Length: 172
Image 1: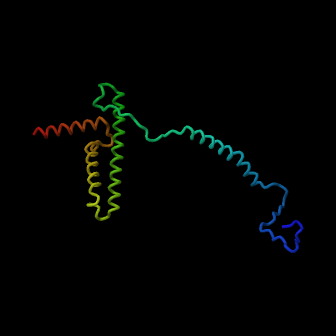
Image 2 (image 1 turned 45 degrees about the horizontal axis):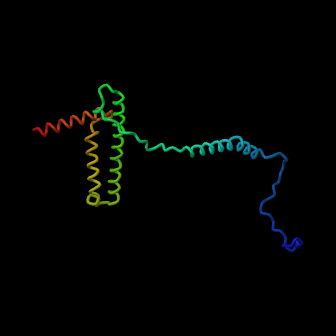
Image 3 (image 1 turned 120 degrees about the vertical axis):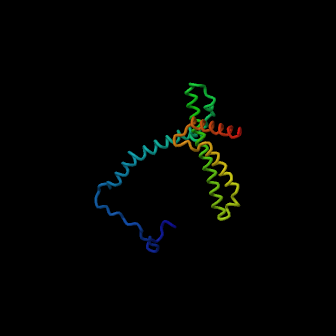
């Protein structure tokens, strides 16, 4: 558009935004408070968090899937070796939790198959049901009847009693 255009022929359209009608010459306190908050609280906290995130990103360590070495059973501990007793007990507790999770996973698979197959789940999910029955039978034979205060020593005694009963039954 040329610099010498006729303003009366092409008038500027009216503005949509209203003109601010300032009643006072004092600044708006809301703007002052928001800027004060931003520079005194928000900016330092955000900057600190960014610095911490950058440091943590460089030194990122995986905190899950902690791997423990297998330790000896209670049967392999020397008499009076309390450290070995403790390690064997902690190993038993880890094994107990792992076996609980195995039962949960197999149960979830069986339930998913039952949900998927509907009324004909008994014939279509026979493998999952059989696997669930085996897993629960093994879990029950190892950890059943231990009670709320089960321990590696109690589990070992239960296993010994089971072995003695099997020997007595095979002898008869």
